[in-house]
Length: 74
Image (tube, rainbow, N blue to C red; front, side):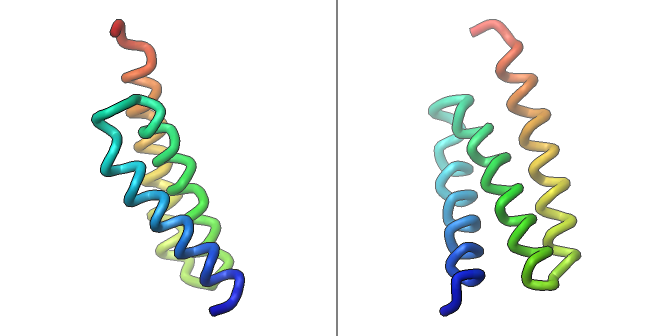
């Protein structure tokens, strides 16, 4: 496997782990958004622009969710 494939594997694995732990802390939501951005970068770098685009949108959705949770009273 080349470095790009390893990067993609890391990004998708981070997405899975962060998504699984979102209920535990709002910071996992932010980490999920970051991992989605990494997944988006991977998609564009490997030439799969639809994947990159969808992951970028998913990162925006996650960031919006984090902002909503972060601003709400605990």
